[in-house]
Image (cartoon, rainbow, N blue to C red; front, side, top):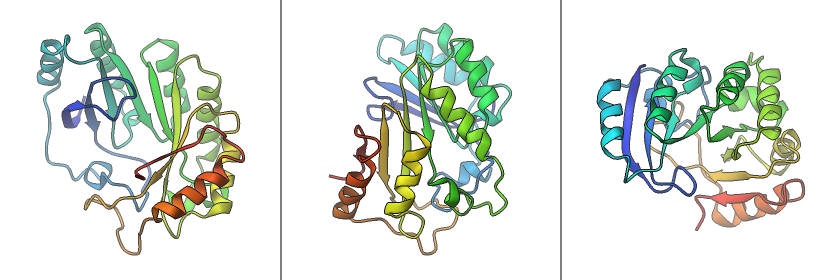
Length: 232
């Protein structure tokens, strides 16, 4: 398994757990605001030996609760199930971050019991997906909808989240995103921040905290449990 990043400890990424984060490289989308451009575009030069990562996790079993696997897009990798089996064999809970374009692989992991939590990105309203994912010819919306349906009917905790960026999102598109996930138990609007490693940084900016709170009120018309991230 190609591991291009490893964070030994996070108290924030896996809700309710102390965890490590494994980063995979490559992504099939080109979201201009992506904060892991080096991973998404396969520019990351670091490579972590899988056995060394697993050895670290083995030694920290009494200190850590879980492992988040993120990217890039982890479901692009056919070797992912084998890695997750090894992580689960160590006794860890597993959280997966995904863009939802590989529903068959998502379902297979859930059916095998390899996932304990899934966080899926909802990029925008259906009409604005192509511009938001940086692919004018984007044709994978049926797959995204299938992944949404899988999570809405799943028995494990999940969340949907939208990174909100000026020029890409507004009240209408947030309502459209909420329409896609009606009935969701957990949905977050994340304020855009410039990581310094964006795919297309030109012209991107964040909504103010007050503007984010206004968008939250809009989202709560359809998803009452919606909450904010990245806003004090």
